[in-house]
Image (tube, rainbow, N blue to C red; front, side, top):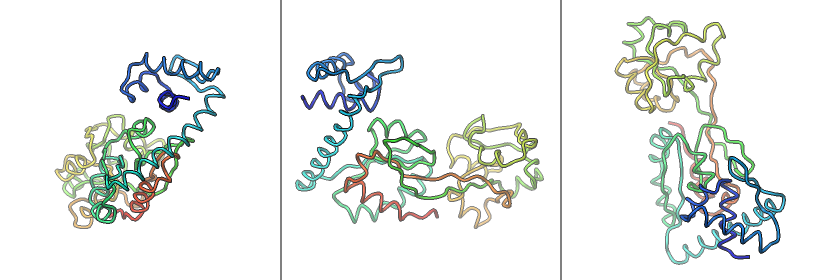
Length: 292
């Protein structure tokens, strides 16, 4: 079997889309189709079934894909070992949510670089991480969104607690004491639909959930925090992002007795990568982070 054609099949099996596979391999879509037809012809088997949304693996295709996972994992491991012996740094492409990456990851990486001078890390800070991971544009991601897929390994990190915040001035001027008082407040949110506020809204009694009339969309957590500082409204953010603000009184926590829903912050990476030495080293290091 031709290794290049196997690589094309492997990428197509991951993306389940001919055009996405072509983009990733930097070839034309017809070149992908031609390689797959040649591979199927050489094996005398049908490996893929075309659908309106892309393609699906046949039974034989699934068997070959599992073998490819092993083969290309071993090739990558060999490449890393060769790179190490040649003093070239091994590269890890790490994705993280924006605020966690800025506030926690980047601020804590200096010691890792000292401990592992042979590993180079590129960072992608985004709120949309799962597709780049599945398409092999990232080696691992840190995300608070749950991703339950059979090809992923999940390493738990933290429970992400949330807090409702406002300035003392805003609270005083708008007489905010109970959740129902938010009806007369400006709500600072990552989206107009208030999906960002779900962990707060869902713990309110159903009759009291429709209390948000004015919403200001700010698509960055740091922007929400700064807007709260400026007394522009009431924000909802991860607690770790405002610990110092709360401690020093620049912001006030609203409704501290309300038992808000929390999220899980996890590391996600494909199962064919999670035993690579470079990934193991980074995972163990990140597990030592503290939300402070």
